[in-house]
Image: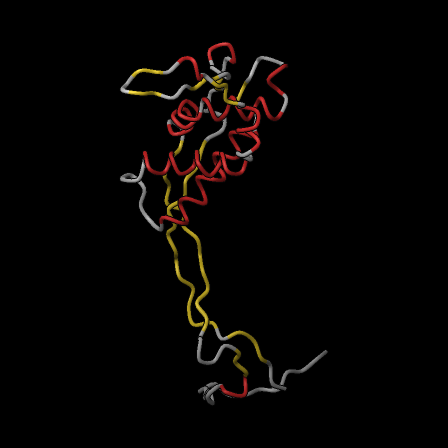
Length: 183
């Protein structure tokens, strides 16, 4: 009876640089809405002076709608990566994906504290996050650590991925064959 299975050549030890955060060590970050400007006005400038007759308000709620949460997370992760680019080793895309997950966990988790109930509404919360992105990135970057994670990875034969006992060489032994008696 022949048996077949994957043709395993060896098991390799693979080191992957992994970004981690010890969430127990992360202190909550409180964003005070009263310290964050959420209203803006712009005016055209001529010769270095603002023309105050043509002041117009920027609709921040409309602008916040143009920045979905996922886009904010990508921007924060990109900023965090660019700040720490020299200290990271390994594949840039692999580390970027990890940063996205860490920033997302921070923004969605309970470590970001906004004390105002009025600012818990998703659009207003998003505006606060956008306006305080540098503060958030600075806070998260203090707790990101680079670790090398060791994993075992099987290495299969690419030429013969499935092997059968029919391909095995004959194996000779010097021991005598003795019948097994059952009692």
